[in-house]
Image (tube, rainbow over the protein chains, first blue to last red):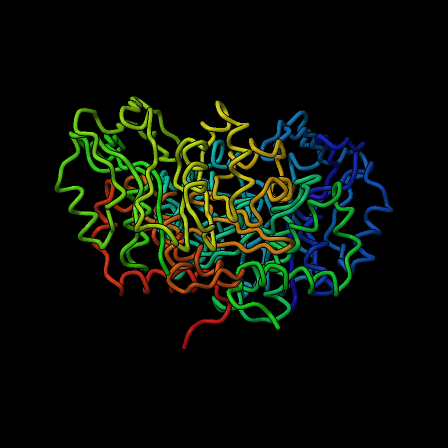
Amino acid sequence: MSLLTVGSVAFDAIETPFGKTDKIIGGAATYISLASSYFVKDGKLVAVVGGDFPKSDIKLLENHGVNTEGLQIKENEKSFFWSGKYHNDMNSRDTLVTELNVLEYFDPIVPESYQGVEFLMLGNLAPTVQRTVIERLEKRPKLIVLDTMNFWMDIMLEELLKTLKLVDVLSINDEEARQLSGEYSLVKAAKKIMEMGPKTLIIKKGEHGALLFQNDNVFFAPALPLEEVFDPTGAGDSFAGGFIGYLAKTNDVSFNSMKKAIIYGSAMASFTVEKFGTERLVNLDKDDLEIRFQRFIDLVQLEAKI
Amino acid sequence: MSLLTVGSVAFDAIETPFGKTDKIIGGAATYISLASSYFVKDGKLVAVVGGDFPKSDIKLLENHGVNTEGLQIKENEKSFFWSGKYHNDMNSRDTLVTELNVLEYFDPIVPESYQGVEFLMLGNLAPTVQRTVIERLEKRPKLIVLDTMNFWMDIMLEELLKTLKLVDVLSINDEEARQLSGEYSLVKAAKKIMEMGPKTLIIKKGEHGALLFQNDNVFFAPALPLEEVFDPTGAGDSFAGGFIGYLAKTNDVSFNSMKKAIIYGSAMASFTVEKFGTERLVNLDKDDLEIRFQRFIDLVQLEAKI
């Protein structure tokens, strides 16, 4: 089934205890598009970059089968730029630089050829922009998934709440779920948030896995215990890409299908953190993915395989 | 199979955001004995209390089938007393009072009738005392499980390392695993710790579940997402009691059996935190336990039950 991803395509400069990068390709929509490309081809992209964005990076997306017709290039402007430094425990980071640049007045134009898309992934962006995309689709997609972060809860909560009413699945981390709901218990938080619009809630807990809530159902996807986390940048977006990619591929949005989807999402995130930026994510093959998926299954399997 | 538990039997005074208790029965061996009593009868206990310890509390243990022949009563001394206050997030606490009292010079006498015991659970205590019990058993038990905490790593590391060489399974939390190994990655930490003696390592992550390591095998038991954690006191000890109780009941110490055992341990911990102290743990029936065990299985099950 067809998939449209909206989000940032950007430059990141990353520093971890293991090293640092110059400006490399980053952004929520980049990670989502790359991760979902292992499930669906011709994934559609709505995003904006500046004239400084290398054609080779756009080519990278296209080589993964991403449809870049909706990628606006503002020749006289600069691309969104984020720079961050991870602490030794890799669980927290300081943002060093955020330059909105082209994102400041981003008008998300949906190409005519994108109309009729069945799956919509709204990567982290201003909730007003996310809502605009929903409004510009003539036919409501079968499934709308939204990812956001505490930043928008801090400065644009009302707009976020309006947008939440329009989506099917919300993906946030545990601290964000607590902030959005005002509840410390994630079970209570989930109940409150599912009354805000999304019928399904994913709570990402980083190295502690992810929870999937829908009605009274709950499913837990573990995280793989890793020897080393090299660079966590893009993990949450890769997770989202694997999640919606699997759903779009199977065209099955049942709770059972979503369980598998969050394991594929977790698998994608586990690859991303193994190297800097998108380096690992662009070099996967189908076998890697299936082997990794099976490791997640085995991790919680009571009976040993024969 | 026969089980011997060594550890503190004590008074706790607990304060949580939900209320506070006077001195109530607590201590590692109390929780372990109660939790394991749902799996094995005539669980043997080596511990010490003072003359101030209520006979009714000893009776409580006996009513759960605990063999208290090895429970020393020092009539002219006072019982070990711990008092703590949990913070609002329930994940951290301040110790308000620690009175060692009878534990200060605890000589763990093993009654003759306890000799030949097949499973030994060394609850959190001075590693010197834990080792003394191992040395006093004429025949080495089939399985020795040791629980300890950061306190002993801080003040008695050399003694702890000596004791670790003698045990099969070590149970500690994630921060303790990091402290003991000097590694942040739990995978790396596990490798180092398994070279210190124990061939099997359990890393407890509280609300984030527990990991079981043995050779190159790893298994993850999730924690149940709970609406409310009322009082975390004794959760780790209840976990240990469920773990060794299941192993002693089945007399199967294979890795596959240990997987089930840590889920039973997690189930026991999930009951304990629902009420103050031992209140919930003393009032379980077999059905409660099996239903709870199944909830843990379902939580990570890909295929829905029919």
